[in-house]
Length: 225
Image (cartoon, rainbow, N blue to C red):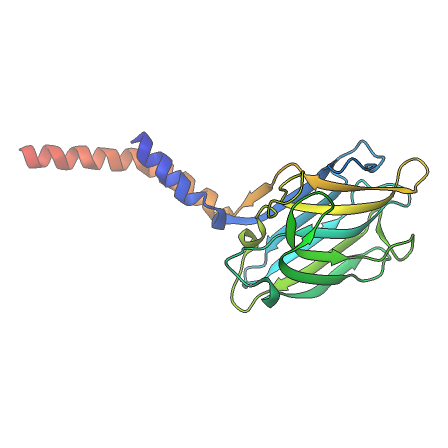
């Protein structure tokens, strides 16, 4: 029974059962200068299923400070698919910053001393108001030649260099007390949000397990009789 229950839960909680996941970039990995705030994460990225075969990418800077800004953001894509077939469109923005460009290529982009990533988002550099900084948010809709969901982006970088691999990385400029330094930041892991129906399925399955066991006992007794 325990083995079957474990198998059931493993199936129900497969990666495809997640409606979205968030990575919170909260560590500096290159030996550079991290953002000044002790509140974490400095930057967050969420991949959210839209339910129509597309995914919304939501990037925000909840705990950057002063003139600190993200100049580049890196993430990964399922290597079994063709990253060059991804399309990006702006859904919404919050704050004042210059719109970014997007580069795509399988394991084509290295984040300082970390491994290689498939997608790089390039923001303006310098300083406000053009840079992607404190309190800014960007929402992009990502589509593919066929239906995709958020699980297609939950992959680690291809190993290369002395750091990582990570699920995402970002270059933050204008860090330090004088605002003239920079650092490379990454998440510690993934925070996944399950599909609501999955919770219902698991609860229902757990409730039905005793009845299933009783039914099996009844059938066995019937055969013996």
